[in-house]
Image 1 (cartoon, rainbow, N blue to C red):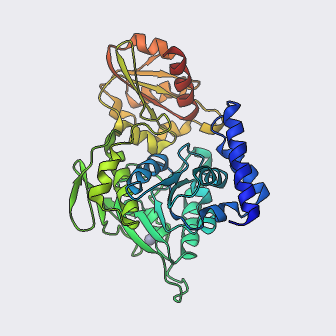
Image 2 (cartoon, rainbow, N blue to C red):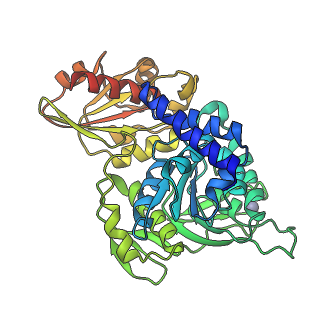
Image 3 (tube, rainbow, N blue to C red):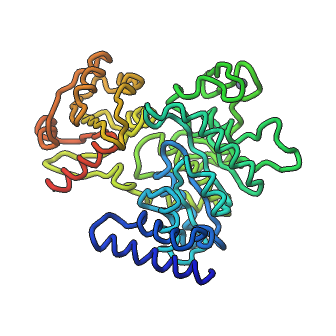
Length: 415
Ligand SMILES: [Zn+2]
């Protein structure tokens, strides 16, 4: 590395360490910020010489990054941004901290994918899904697909691992009809991880016609855009690879959603030459991801925390949760989005028949939604009250972003 980059990298590590020592989180944002101030090319310098995979999408990227890091780990040391700092400052900090590693797997905020692709010259990118993150950002889905598409076409050497079940992702990974024929588009490997949430992809991003769906197939009623045949897919409790071989996947993470994330991780690792039969053994080592899926026991209740930050991830959380008493918590602070009307886009019917408790700043918005949806519930003010209201055994907790942080803090205090 050039001298300036070496100094920037060293200062970045020191700043992150100081921030950690001062108890201000893991320091990766401030460390990366200072490093990039000293050398704006620092991320490119740190990326040089490494084989890098980027993981992006609205949901599942933190978990998929952890699983892919474990799978690529079969080959040697892997640098990763395990604290979910998924913008260039976080990537810079993660690579500076890791020192020289042959591999890196980085979670990338979908807004920054083009920038990080340009800076890191990554070998592989996995595109998971695109849906509205918060109501006030809803119009961004089509725009994001457009940005991804433009970024991919600039990197003809790139290998793209993309979700065949999400029309927006398929469109983004497919080169435009009028693209410069002298440029070879990136090679795409398709995986099938399912799509529970269809409300952001009823309309074809190419021609504006309706997207039709039947079983697991989808197609545009006005143009040739349709679901490609996936090479990797989830079958029963395992994953089928491109040769047709089936691998049993034993995860410590719940739900079919995470089997889909595992399929993606195996596809990413395969691009680096890791055989699925070797990679699959590593996936079971991932337990909780940034506190999500964490299980704690208190007064005979086995409590599991599930984060649901947008409509699509609420549907996924219902898939992951056991048929057990369930506490739902909703806030509407800045990181959550201030508007809770998205609650009416989510069908809470899967919770019928379970004991449902509600809490959080906006519990009463949730109460109205559940009442309309015909789901009986009980309001509690604190987590301690929730524990008293439920029998011993499993207690599922599904919460949006700041509500999740609040419950983690309360659990840390009471445990
Ligand atoms: Zn179309």
